[in-house]
Image 1 (cartoon, rainbow over the protein chains, first blue to last red):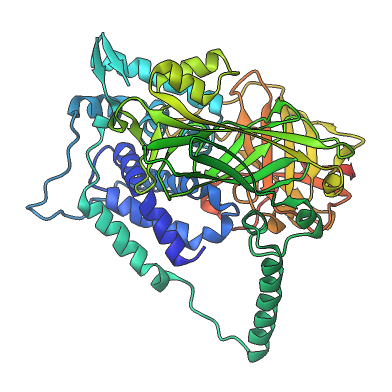
Image 2 (spheres, rainbow over the protein chains, first blue to last red):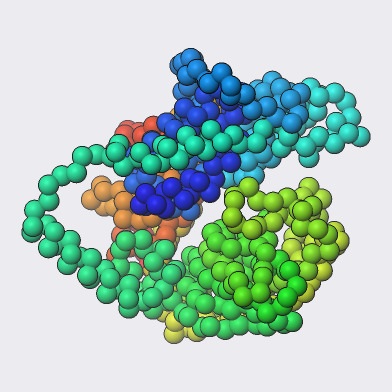
Length: 155
Length: 395
């Protein structure tokens, strides 16, 4: 894969990368660092990806690992310009409830419902089985409904 | 009941995020390994190899073969199996044409094109094909429409579809094979703005795969996508485009593939491994292993990792000389076999579908497990000692 193709394919999925990074990290502070590290690693290791059809799920898997590495290292974020407001979602209580979920339930919801990956793709990204993803989606949404209060219908 | 839209949990992507991505992408080459000095002899050899490869591609002019074999020349058998029928179906100004297909006994690869002369805005889609009347067992749509996405079809703007489908039953190469396609174009009955737009920019893809549609689909698998969308009142059928293709027995002569010969089940203290399929065809490889645990699996930790050696593993395919066969293939993850199946109580299924193929199918193949890690991209695998199994193959 040459640089032009790599660039095009990354740009094509950048909004998904943002959503995954934002909701895996729980905020915007380290999102840029995580995606930068993921892109550098993906570029260096692109020869190992033997089927280009899996590029995006492969890249997202690397990004999730980088997010977790950053969380484990707990490196302080680079200071943001004073006039730069951190992006906030339209539904902040929903974001907070989602972040309150156990990561094993949050990750499938983020990948499937917010980033738009199929259950099979989410399973590949999370290195688990589709049946596990389906079950955790149901359990995760049930817990999310509980966190948001009775009567909330998720879509 | 109040409805909560999950997508509102995430803010729009800030410009700064996009800027960091583009800045990183622009700097990537600076981070590559330093270039080595190359001898004139090596340059001449490379030019010769490129010329030969170019001639091979010029001879085929096939997008499918280019995709399947990557940088390598396609095998003679694969070239023989490739058919470019140019067969089409047309209704109400919408045409579906099969540009080319390749049926190698394992997989059906196909490229089709939708075109429209209609001034009306349409969306087009396709259901999984049937082979000898039997629906295929799934696969991938890598370009154009998909099972959960329809593509806007506009006048003078063709939509190309690329599909790889896994056959549910082995093909009897001594008899002609029929392939049934069901393409369609739909006229939206509701504003496209109500449809869930695909997150990939520039794709012009719309998904109708709502919870309601999903439920309907699960209830009755015989329903087509078009029927489901009509039932939901989202769209009406503007063109039904069924196509029948017959693949001759002569063409299928090259559809030779391998089966396991002799022992296929291996017993270990903590599990039993069964080699269900080790199928090397002319243009693809299908491998399937079932691992039957003799004990419960460990629980996943907070990071969704599981270091249970029965779960946290992948399998490499080794030739008789010990080299990884996947090095000669494309497809799969890091040359390993992906895992699928149920968490507990069911066998773990390791399935591997590879495009392209080694020049000759081996007489034996060894499955060697190793611990899977995303930090090990491209590094040699450390096989788990004493757990590799070897099976004999016959054509």
